[in-house]
Length: 226
Image (tube, rainbow, N blue to C red; front, top):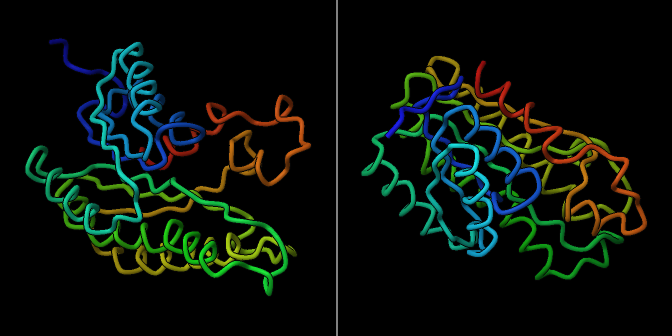
């Protein structure tokens, strides 16, 4: 088997929300740079499509069909990664849930809970489970997909905005705790991108004139290479 080449050759990269959109684009970009990508998403068929794209680029992938709200399975995934690879070089916390837009006082409690669990609690559980593995890497890198809604108060973005604000502070706090380690942490805000989440939020928008997921994958690569 030919040894991988590229700027991420030999590195192990875990990417959540990897079955489509930005996550899939980051998976392709990292794989093209030689990383072995661990792809996490709920939909098996969509993961397999991304796996085919990774293979077409000469890369390799491990598929992990997982609903990130099954928090205990995140811990199990961390243990499995340690057993197989002995470390984790890159963590990309990209999976996100929009919920429903509307007045804060009109939010359905169940929807609010799901948004917070997907966008905040699942990433906390990833941090908790993956920090020891990142510390075992020569240069561990972790990055999370941010959004302007997390630091600019915009009416009707409700649970999603709250969750992104919480995510930003959580990641910044974690990063402050890692300053004396080899692990570096970043928030990546790609701006408006043509994704399913964006299409749900702005159904009348012409996505053909917007940034596409592959256009912003380089932002994540830059952080992986810092």
